[in-house]
Length: 132
Image 1: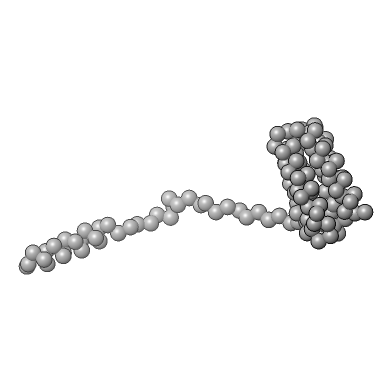
Image 2 (image 1 turned 180 degrees about the vertical axis):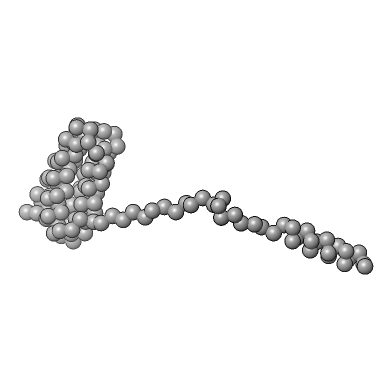
Protein backbone atom coordinates (compact mmCIF):
# COMPACT_ATOMS: atom_id res chain seq x y z
CA UNK A 1 0.00 0.00 0.00
CA UNK A 2 1.28 3.39 -0.81
CA UNK A 3 1.55 6.26 1.55
CA UNK A 4 -1.18 8.16 -0.34
CA UNK A 5 -3.61 5.27 0.03
CA UNK A 6 -2.90 5.02 3.76
CA UNK A 7 -3.40 8.75 4.25
CA UNK A 8 -6.62 8.69 2.22
CA UNK A 9 -7.92 5.87 4.40
CA UNK A 10 -7.07 7.76 7.59
CA UNK A 11 -8.73 10.94 6.35
CA UNK A 12 -11.88 9.02 5.39
CA UNK A 13 -12.05 7.32 8.79
CA UNK A 14 -11.47 10.56 10.69
CA UNK A 15 -14.14 12.36 8.64
CA UNK A 16 -16.64 9.63 9.40
CA UNK A 17 -15.96 10.08 13.11
CA UNK A 18 -16.71 13.82 12.89
CA UNK A 19 -20.25 13.68 11.53
CA UNK A 20 -22.70 15.94 13.32
CA UNK A 21 -25.38 14.41 15.48
CA UNK A 22 -28.71 16.02 16.27
CA UNK A 23 -30.58 15.50 19.51
CA UNK A 24 -34.03 17.10 19.22
CA UNK A 25 -34.59 16.92 22.98
CA UNK A 26 -31.83 19.49 23.49
CA UNK A 27 -33.43 22.09 21.22
CA UNK A 28 -35.43 24.76 22.97
CA UNK A 29 -38.77 25.79 21.48
CA UNK A 30 -38.41 29.48 20.64
CA UNK A 31 -41.62 30.03 18.74
CA UNK A 32 -43.54 33.09 19.81
CA UNK A 33 -47.29 33.20 19.77
CA UNK A 34 -48.46 35.76 17.24
CA UNK A 35 -50.70 38.49 18.53
CA UNK A 36 -53.23 40.14 16.34
CA UNK A 37 -54.70 43.53 16.83
CA UNK A 38 -57.99 44.53 15.32
CA UNK A 39 -58.54 48.19 14.60
CA UNK A 40 -61.80 49.59 15.88
CA UNK A 41 -64.45 50.18 13.24
CA UNK A 42 -66.89 53.00 12.68
CA UNK A 43 -67.16 56.29 10.89
CA UNK A 44 -64.44 58.84 11.45
CA UNK A 45 -66.78 60.87 13.66
CA UNK A 46 -67.64 57.81 15.76
CA UNK A 47 -64.00 56.83 16.13
CA UNK A 48 -63.00 60.36 17.11
CA UNK A 49 -65.80 60.49 19.70
CA UNK A 50 -64.54 57.26 21.22
CA UNK A 51 -60.95 58.56 21.06
CA UNK A 52 -62.01 61.66 22.96
CA UNK A 53 -63.83 59.54 25.58
CA UNK A 54 -60.75 57.39 26.12
CA UNK A 55 -58.40 60.38 26.26
CA UNK A 56 -60.67 62.16 28.73
CA UNK A 57 -60.77 59.08 30.97
CA UNK A 58 -57.00 58.54 30.92
CA UNK A 59 -56.09 60.87 33.80
CA UNK A 60 -58.77 59.31 36.01
CA UNK A 61 -57.48 55.84 35.22
CA UNK A 62 -54.00 56.99 36.13
CA UNK A 63 -55.18 58.62 39.38
CA UNK A 64 -56.98 55.43 40.42
CA UNK A 65 -53.89 53.34 39.56
CA UNK A 66 -55.82 51.58 36.82
CA UNK A 67 -54.43 49.93 33.73
CA UNK A 68 -53.10 53.05 32.06
CA UNK A 69 -51.20 51.04 29.41
CA UNK A 70 -54.40 49.34 28.26
CA UNK A 71 -56.10 52.75 28.08
CA UNK A 72 -53.21 54.10 26.03
CA UNK A 73 -53.38 51.11 23.71
CA UNK A 74 -57.08 51.82 23.09
CA UNK A 75 -56.26 55.47 22.35
CA UNK A 76 -53.55 54.46 19.89
CA UNK A 77 -55.83 51.94 18.17
CA UNK A 78 -58.65 54.45 17.86
CA UNK A 79 -56.31 57.01 16.36
CA UNK A 80 -54.91 54.38 14.01
CA UNK A 81 -58.42 53.68 12.78
CA UNK A 82 -59.52 57.33 12.60
CA UNK A 83 -56.34 58.78 11.08
CA UNK A 84 -57.06 57.86 7.42
CA UNK A 85 -60.42 59.60 7.61
CA UNK A 86 -58.94 62.69 9.23
CA UNK A 87 -56.12 62.73 6.68
CA UNK A 88 -58.67 62.53 3.84
CA UNK A 89 -60.74 65.46 5.07
CA UNK A 90 -58.45 67.59 7.26
CA UNK A 91 -54.83 66.57 6.66
CA UNK A 92 -53.71 69.83 8.25
CA UNK A 93 -54.96 68.56 11.65
CA UNK A 94 -53.08 65.23 11.60
CA UNK A 95 -49.88 66.65 13.18
CA UNK A 96 -51.96 68.12 16.02
CA UNK A 97 -53.58 64.76 16.68
CA UNK A 98 -50.18 63.06 16.55
CA UNK A 99 -48.76 65.52 19.09
CA UNK A 100 -51.73 64.93 21.39
CA UNK A 101 -51.33 61.14 21.12
CA UNK A 102 -47.61 61.53 21.87
CA UNK A 103 -48.55 63.58 24.92
CA UNK A 104 -50.81 60.72 26.07
CA UNK A 105 -47.87 58.34 25.61
CA UNK A 106 -45.59 60.54 27.69
CA UNK A 107 -48.29 60.96 30.34
CA UNK A 108 -48.47 57.19 30.72
CA UNK A 109 -44.72 56.69 30.54
CA UNK A 110 -43.95 59.28 33.21
CA UNK A 111 -47.23 58.85 35.15
CA UNK A 112 -48.29 62.45 34.69
CA UNK A 113 -52.07 62.77 34.87
CA UNK A 114 -51.86 66.51 34.18
CA UNK A 115 -50.30 65.79 30.78
CA UNK A 116 -53.13 63.36 30.06
CA UNK A 117 -55.66 66.13 30.84
CA UNK A 118 -53.84 68.55 28.55
CA UNK A 119 -53.77 65.95 25.76
CA UNK A 120 -57.50 65.34 26.21
CA UNK A 121 -58.22 69.08 25.91
CA UNK A 122 -56.14 69.24 22.72
CA UNK A 123 -57.94 66.21 21.29
CA UNK A 124 -61.30 67.77 22.19
CA UNK A 125 -60.41 70.94 20.27
CA UNK A 126 -59.24 68.95 17.25
CA UNK A 127 -62.27 66.66 17.26
CA UNK A 128 -64.54 69.70 17.38
CA UNK A 129 -62.92 71.11 14.23
CA UNK A 130 -63.06 67.81 12.34
CA UNK A 131 -66.67 67.03 13.20
CA UNK A 132 -67.99 70.59 12.70
